[in-house]
Length: 357
Ligand code: SAM
Ligand code: DTB
Ligand code: SF4
Image (tube, rainbow, N blue to C red; front, side, top):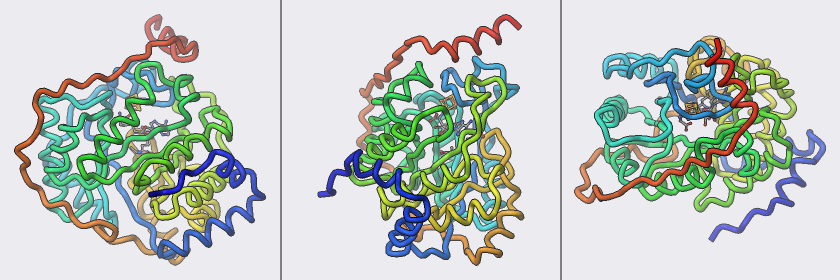
């Protein structure tokens, strides 16, 4: 049984002098991971824009005026080409994202299941991030060969409701539980720089660290302040906040793969090097994240050369899933996702701008 991590402990780590914290985190990192390896995940948006949710940070929310259009789903051929290119460039994982609130049992989901099979057949780890999923849907993804599911808590429970009104924190936790029950590895992390306090960041890490087992990967994103979203004017976080967050995540979840995620276009190689020293062991690569820019893959490969890093091979930590068909999907299942619907003034203000234009 895993010991419960306390908020006090996490806050104490968070407030340590930076170099003491990095030294401690690097020591823990080297006890559990090969410090020369960094895993590369390539992101691919398979369904962009038009999302019904009101996430204050997201350029894909249909209600804000962000310039991201509602597009159709990528075809199997498009995904296969993107996956092969990513693999050639050193990616061990393809992470497919859809701008959905939750998965529905429809033809689009059947298409996603085919995409999962296609990428798994290329001997890459397949990750999806599709919004909330029920236990049956998670089982179907698992049976198709899904390796990981990304579903971020994004912040503390208290701060979450200041940023999103269309879904609740418990729905996120329930989805993670469904993913876990289906035997898929869990990828869950958050965003810093949304106006949350250090205490909120620590609370989110306590919640993640007290999941049993802990998530296999934790992405730490710096907010990409996108024009038209309620958070468009947020001040960028400093690299030292990112390093601190990575280091505390490393201490809170020693075996987890900490992923240096959105925000790398604003970071120097020196800054990213400090993050790798503090325990980051993965990046999102590809010239785009989902809709916003990311460093060029050749620049990333140069960075790997300079720092003496090598990309992790696929299935280093867990075996390749073998697609199978389980007969026991409970078709009577009815998802009950919540819609808190409280008013967030900043989100409403951005929506009004859109409708009056
Ligand atoms: N719609 C699904 C959902 O929300 O779970 C999956 C896609 S959603 C874009 C996945 C994650 O992207 C979010 O949970 C959030 O952490 C991250 N994200 C979205 N917009 C971001 C931004 N502007 N800056 C940093 N991270 C962002
Ligand atoms: C995660 O934690 N970060 C990625 C991935 N999981 C899906 C997404 C970042 C999105 C940044 C905004 C955009 O490009 O639209
Ligand atoms: Fe939709 Fe996900 Fe963006 Fe929220 S974060 S608006 S759910 S795509």
